[in-house]
Length: 343
Image 1: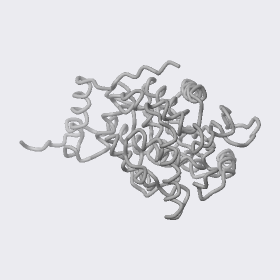
Image 2: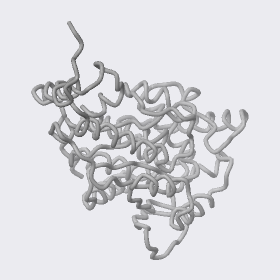
Image 3: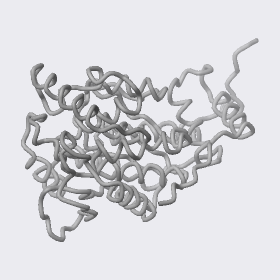
Image 4: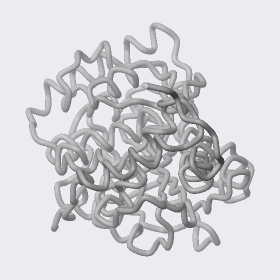
């Protein structure tokens, strides 16, 4: 497997041009806050002072997790395939928000424990009917993990646009994400584990103990060995998709806890991927804020979301449009004949 080559977006000359363009708009300096930083980032990603958003897409990766056998979820595993059916029928929150904001939506079967058969709108990349139970053995073989990453790369090569949002579905995947977070950041397991689909305090404690025992069982280090031991097929495919999207100089819209756990892996492999990431929101899932702090990330929204599916990414799309549109369409002091601030 060849890891994509990702070029940092740093360009002192272009950054200066973007600053000048942003500061010359008819507004006090810095008065558009995070939108100004976002406009500059998108300009640097696209290597232009006149960026544009083309055909934003959201990929929702679905996969099942063998660790569900340990009783770490408030919902049964069947909910994974049932929610995929809901996505395909257009009835989930991500369908509503993607339609509302003009995003194409593709659902990827990365490894769901269900036979969907050929279905319109479903991309079949099933490696297996879910990962193995990492409480007793590694979730994936090294080969399956690499194949999942490669599948993710291939999916992005086919996309026509320049903005990609990431979503996921998989009962048990907050347990996998918490294990990845702990191993890749060193943050104690107790600070990585949350309620997921709605566990009570006793359930969260059980989930914590399952992860702690699994970490003791699997003595692994490094991004790919950790991903193989604890991750999911949907998480591994997101890693590949993120790396390829950054190589293609796309804007990456990062969703919540599980998507950010995939980014932890991608950033360990290629730190430059972070230059291309826009962090849509801070999830209400316990641990996400710590994960974001570890990455030095600033989020656009804080709505108390913890649904997943890419919903936060879809909701952030209008803010990307706002950032690009003010940069391209807002008058300058000179063009509007507005007096600038006196020295």
